Length: 402
Image 1 (tube, rainbow, N blue to C red):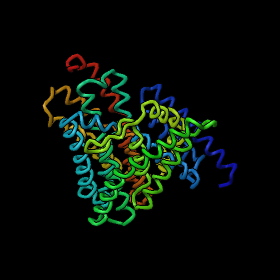
Image 2: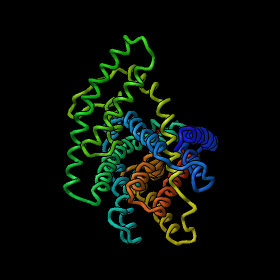
Image 3: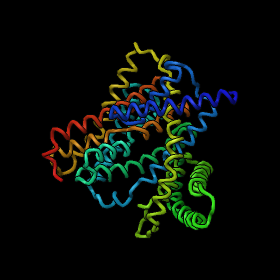
């Protein structure tokens, strides 16, 4: 691509993503839906103005890594510990059941290969904590009993999801499922999550020191982005996806992070807030490029919409994604209405599901039809649950404790 064309395409991506995100927000929908639609409009599905060229893909890769950094930065591990067994039950059932349902549907019903079916199940396990937190916050229910259970479960879902993502990445690179590769990735993840916080803590101390003596603005975002990119590179060198490095860096720098076995790494609250505040503009610049890229990569015109496959696949996967998340709360002892609210709150897939789907596409695991079906499922499970949550709270809110 010539330089001036790249500038024009990037301009279109950024502005269109912003306009569609604003429209989505005004319609009380997640902004990620607007950014995804921006890619569909600009790409081969509709206008065909922008193609997913390599330069844009690289920017989108940076967006994914920074997005996972933000997820790690906002992860509250203490909340998971304090929320206890109920969150654990909701999280584990919401992780295992969609994975199992998706795999069985893909492998048995649609006769797909085990690797493709495993990627489908993995995509269905994701829960978008950002969307759930936003809805609970809008309804002033973050500190409610169901809010605490949901947020604790979503934290564990995030951690399990990233580990599963590392495993799927290894399978896609190796061309199949291997117990040796599973063991290697699990050992790496364990070592990485032990060593990364220590390294990040030491580096953050240096950053905080030089931030106090530097006479130039921009030290924190420059050094933090450098740290995230270094962790992403290190993850790739050891054989895991770069995304894992971004997540580990965010988790390590989180003011709510602590190492297991009571070994605390105390973080300056003001400095942690400063990191979040100064990193937000950079994250908000790059992450929409990733979501637009998902839409650009989706060629809806190439799909045979008259084929029964796309409709049966999308409907069954939507049911598997929803039921798999909603069954878990019925294993805990809570009022029926509260269990219903917990189940609905765990359904949104959002940006995390799109990361799984995109990995399946770029690794050649997903065909265009399967990829389109997964994006449709992710879009619906992102768009509908917030509406159902708000409607349910208006109907049953007075019956809920807290």
